Image 1 (cartoon, rainbow, N blue to C red):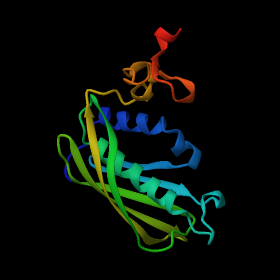
Image 2: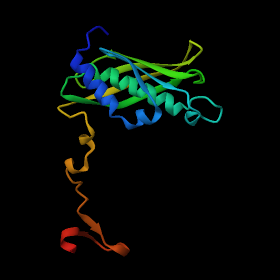
Image 3: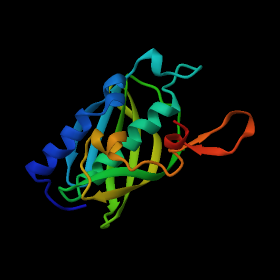
Image 4: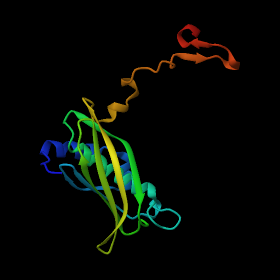
Length: 180
């Protein structure tokens, strides 16, 4: 995809990535970022393996999902945030090596939905082996802050059933305020 990533958009994506606790926990590094592209890498750690000693497919999927999400986010408006709505992952080979690298590229940008492909490679001694391909769809949430405030319970309207308190032993529901 052709285009130039503005410095403002680059900073927005990098700031969002830096807030991801799971990426920090795994030790994922943002290696490259462009307009509609993103590359992430994670080093081998035995705590991220499955029973045969390969990177666990969950790590592979997480890396691909995040690379795809940030490639999509790089083409979205400044006053928006991104969420993955769907992905399909094909595991092509055991994910082994000193590190995994996911490279994502936007295939089809849209106003609301962005389709992205992410390829994951296992790297050993400078040789890359293609281990997975993901096709993902990301959704642009226009007018939403890209921060933890989006999930702040105090900012959400109460659930309609939140005020209903169920009586014990199968009794009728009671309004919590009326029951007090």
